[in-house]
Image (cartoon, rainbow, N blue to C red; front, side, top):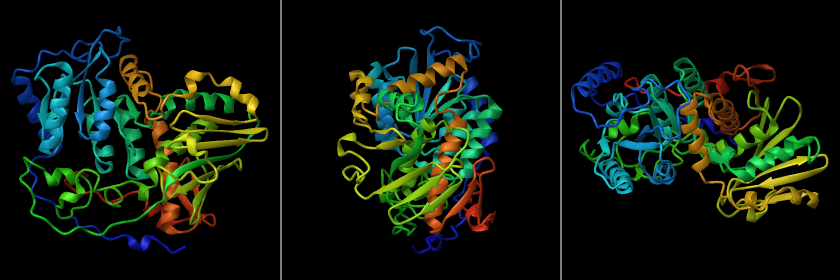
Amino acid sequence: MQKRAACFHEASGQTADFAPSRRTFLTATAQAVGAAVLPTIVSAKALGLEAAAAAASERLTLGVIGFGPRCKYVLTEMLKFPDVQCVAIADVQATQRNAGKAFVDGHYGTTDCAVYRDMRELLARPDIDCLFIATGDRWHGKAAMMAAEAGKDVYCEKPCGLTIDVCRRIAETFQATGRIFQAGTQRRSVPNFIRVKELVQAGKIGELTEMHASVYVPSLKNDWLPAQPTPDPEQCDWNVWLGPAPWRPYNADYLGRGWRGVYDFEAGARLLDWGVHTVDLCQWVKGADGTGPVEFTPSDTGIVCRYADGVPLTLHFLAEPFRDRGPQFNTKLGTCPVRFVGKEGWISTGDAGLVDVEPATLASELPEAVKRVQGTDASAHARNFFDCVKTRQPAVCNADVMRRSHAVSHAAANSWILGRPLGFDPATEAFTSGGKPDAEANGLKQRPEREVWA
């Protein structure tokens, strides 16, 4: 396997002119907001009810950062809750923020949803309780930490951090601020995955001996698209679109899904796109939320991640992720399939809701209601988040859970990038080779951030 680290480049530190610091901006904006006439929505925070377990009828105010297809899908479920009201959309693209406003206003039959080009204006609003962050990967971690520091609870789409270091900083920020965090790895809230976890942990397939998870075929792409004229910031604020990512010239093809696969903009060489879901499920089912594998061995077809107790988690590369399932997974399982093997049987499931089992007698322990719920359904996961905002209890995919499961995916991706086995200490998040610190691998735990956002 060729060493892939050679694909890296020293990114330009160039920045566009950018006036105020975040602290200065938030302070000034908060003062301006305080002097203005705000919408007649009073947040739980303003009422002093934040720490109490509020009644179900108490309304939480929601802001959204980044409006696109994934946001629309999850927000559709959030808007169904009578105790949640979306009041603002922030997006650097005019077409997107206007589409978000039309979507929210259309749901409520009003024209009240505010729009912002700069999310810091939204963060400065004291009447917003919580945020839904659905930007591209490059912004997830930074936006989540800025939101926590502004006193907001956060539901953040995945992958939540571009690196192991960003995931660590997210967890530490939410611990320090006491805010509620929910990663958008919603399959922990879907019935068929919940039931599989219950069966495995109840010993129905005997002692767990191996796990299998599906991931995209990793890739490294860092070529620059041809430069195009930078648009008016009111139409697309390219400087803020890039955020903490290295500067590069504007090209309209990056917008939408065009940033996918570009190393500067996406986490873990594409491996985290599915890995944060399937690896997270394996961590959960194994009962390993506080730890992770200690060895990572890459190949051209997958990566074997081995835990300290010897149990291997094999990440299988799927060339056609929405068609190819490989020999380990029934094609009827749907996307994000996982498989758990024990000494007395095995069990598999995926987004289609189907659960495969051996021995067949286990099928009797799978109620029909479990079998046909789509794994992409985010309604229960969103409900868990809003309930935790009220009770102040940790969400099912809180920042600590996210940190550990994301670290596994990142470590696996780094072993593939370097093209060699790596040792890993889940407690210190340090890489080793041959029992000695591996400077090259440890260097991949973080990426430079443009100083304006660092």
